[in-house]
Amino acid sequence: NPTAEIKQGNTLSTPLFLDANNRLKMFDFVVANFPFSFKSWSNGVDPVNDPYQRFAGYGIPPSKNGDYAFLLHIIRSLKSKGKGAVILPHGVLFRGNAEAEIRTNIIRKGYMKGIIGLPANLFYGTGIPACIIVLDKENAENRKGIFMIDASKGFAKDGNKNRLREQDIHKIVDVFNKQIEISKYSRMVSVTEI
Image (cartoon, rainbow, N blue to C red; front, side, top):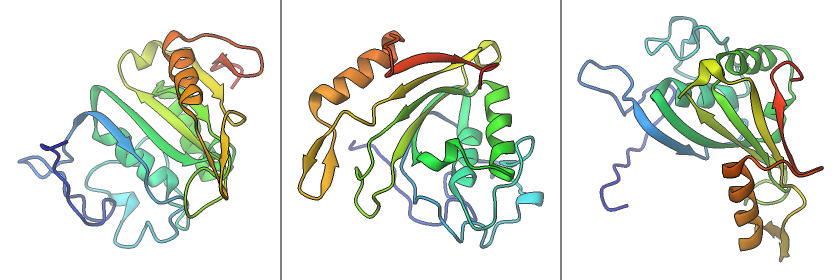
């Protein structure tokens, strides 16, 4: 994108996308793939007194695991009708303690529109399975469930990595956009069941 603005720095301790009033800049869309399970996310961050209010109402992520710190930064950076897609390690869906509390609060607000489970060994630098969390603030208060896709079995081996083929990507996109329920692949899961 020739008009893209790229800034390098520590997004959590010193956000660089700020408005004229030194608040987080708000976006219509956010797409992100940040470092998985970043151990030192809290260096330079005081989550209890965060000037950007990223953790208020959600909880504070564990000091040695930054997945939810980045996710909450993204949620805070979305406009009231903002949408996002974030690649995260699959563990964010299951880990307990502070992360379970944060996940529960995000679900209660209705911000999670979908979860797409991806194959293991897809990304360079890690073999762990990942997922895409689809965020959507528009009509979040009326959201009664999360559309989930298990796309973990649709891939081709490519050397020592796995790769999504065109047909795998098209199936994910079509099923998600049309909210098609396919046995053992996709379905709408109610918040009550979650």
